[in-house]
Amino acid sequence: MKTIYMDNNATTRTAPEVVEAMAPFWSERYGNPSSAHRFGGNVRTMVDAARAETADLLGASPDEIVFTSGGSESDNMAIRGVLDALEGRKRHVVTTRVEHPAVLAVCRALKNQGVPVTELPVEADGSLDMGGLEEAVTPDTAVVSVMWANNETGVMFPIEKIAGIVKSQGALLHTDAVQAVGKIPIDLSRIPVDLLSLSAHKFHGPKGIGALYIREGTQVSPLVLGGHQEGSKRAGTENTPGIAGLGAACSLARRNLDQEGTRVKGLRDRLETGVLETCKGARVNGKTRLPNTLNVSFEYIEGESILLKLDQFGICASSGSACTSGSLEPSHVLRAMGVPFTASHGSIRFSLSRYTTEEEIDAVLERLPGIVDGLRALSPFVKD
Image 1: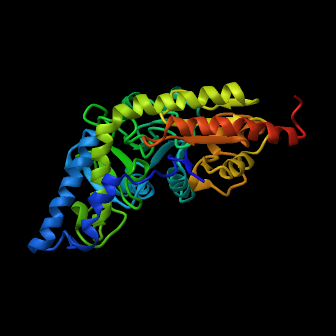
Image 2: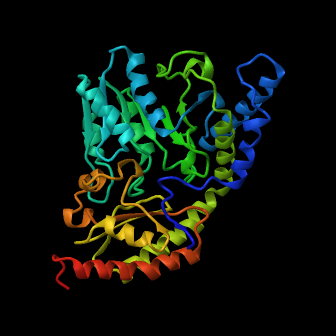
Image 3: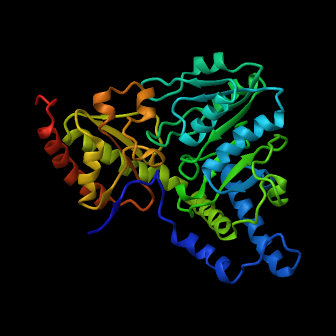
């Protein structure tokens, strides 16, 4: 059975070009880039090149890129690192109710430690309550953490406008851009974001490697202490195969951004139109979305049941974030958007990539309506 993979917001296939770029650093170029000898120095040259590729994708300077283990570490380092560096001069943190658990969990842990935290609501279409943001940010606000694009719905927030509000109060802006990097253009040379998190495995790079962009002049205390790697911002011997893979993935993403905005979006729109036309009780969640993401709810049936039946045909999708899979609670994102309980439990996320084909879209549209009809026929709440 051929696998039809439409869970790319959870993780992506590592591109063959990325695997090739990583290969020498397992057994041939295995030196420590911090070593003084030439063998290690050759590896340091690759690390510098990968840092430059990452910076180019973001419109940043290589000196502003700190390699991490991925998005979760980058989020934690951004928020905790800013507060630690400020040493209590400012303590207030602002975020949103729809953030990834890597942001919400650290904010709620800080709140339990006495740090004032404000969680902003969103509108029914997933957009941010901008008036609420203006009211929430005060001279005591240390950092505002707002995601660039939501991992479950694909809804994109207006980061440039958000930055204007945040900077007017002298606060720092962190954005979890894990889902946005590699899918839409990002130019930090013109948008005054102070910190940005990314993760390679969300755009065809390897798992276990990511980066935190730290704008020049922004003070962030390290989470991991020890050596002087990463400009003394993150201790530990560098994950050189992963860094090589991240650099290659960034280079590929920069060359393929137009494809994400046109071909992939066209496939997503075709899938969306087909689902709405053929599946009863379907509703799309969110507007102004990433070009690859479709979150759709089916009233009065369980999303998990849909996923299990899709899986029988080799179709991979998700009921939300992979980081919250196994939870019996409805999506915190859909709850924040006010999606009714009868629909939020039947929510499915399809997330496409540059490897998605028209034939795969057709296969989903062939199987999904029958699955939905069959489950609706079993539901005691459906009155067709």
